[in-house]
Amino acid sequence: MAASALARGLSLLGAFTLMLLVTLAPRALTTPEGGAVSHGLLMLVMWGLSAGFVHGVGFVPRHPVVRLLLGPIPAWLGMGLGFSFYLRYFMG
Image (cartoon, rainbow, N blue to C red; front, side, top):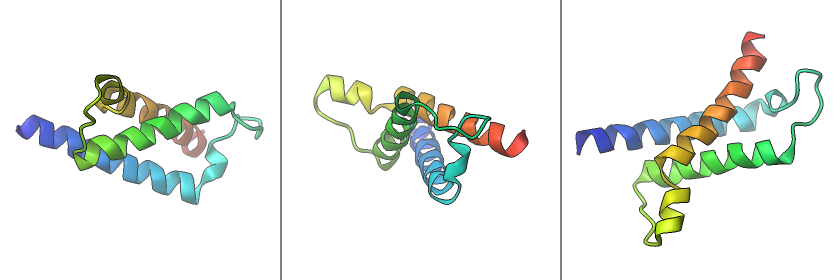
């Protein structure tokens, strides 16, 4: 149970942090040349962000496909993609 609480806490913290970054520094979600990133990549980031909030607050969908799509693995992968844009933007 403690591992589950830790995972949910990390999901919620990651989702909240990424939400603030997307809101306050949207320019980081661009290509290195300053152009727009593909909508497909942005969709994956937003999916991860949404799944992070769903997992973080402890909601468990009943339908197995939705449970899989909004679980911790898609959340962490999508948020990781989003954080990689910000790492590249702030470090590079």
